[in-house]
Image (cartoon, rainbow, N blue to C red):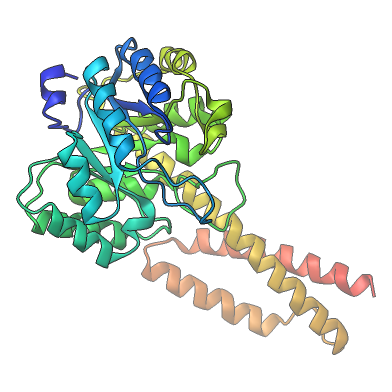
Length: 357
């Protein structure tokens, strides 16, 4: 990315990925200064992040250093030459961050879920030409995420970007927050805004950072946000997902940065394949749920001495599915093959229930 452009934070889709790094929380002056100095020696890192106010679930947890941390962040900016970014959740946060020369702001996932809070921040930033990065809400709600962008746009903010930090989801997975890649892809399709992937919050542990960052790049994200601490094992917040500057340098060296200017087809294909993978996962969850209900029906039939197969009902169900599928543009052969396989599996499961009685 052109450094002059980056200093103005006029981030464009399709440019060299912007890498934002820094600690989850700014804990002390020595901690942020040491981290910033080390990050400044990594050419790919173009922005220093650091949490000043931390929204925590429990009131006794470390909630950030507040205004004192902004003094240290300003000093880190002066020493490292890196532009800075921090999270704001109230109009007072906005006022203080701008007063201490923070270059860009992000709106956190817990704030985006509340339209009242988003509107207050949009009002506080009205008439201010500052880049604003908007994280996705905690829940997988695309409309809520889009709504946050609309509020800032109505307030006159033009330099808006999205941050994908994953979603709370019912699926068990190795991730702290499930990626659901199709949602940020759809957001960028609708709004045409640059997309930064916060791999630290998606992963929740440092072991998953490399493959997740690579997948984000393969899906043509416009940048990565990676939490980096001079001593992660002593971090006051989210130590398991943070890495040292040395580890960050190694991670960046292991990534494959693909050209976006000549790989539009590849990007589209990767996006579509990612969407198919997620849809397939949802289909498997639905099939598992269907088999559970089928087993409950088997128990009921057993208790009430009813045969497993109700042929007339099955014929009607299949005919209805074929008609619905045809209306959706699906061939009858596909519908028949899929639902006959599902029906056969259900019959076999109910038969085993009968036999075990």
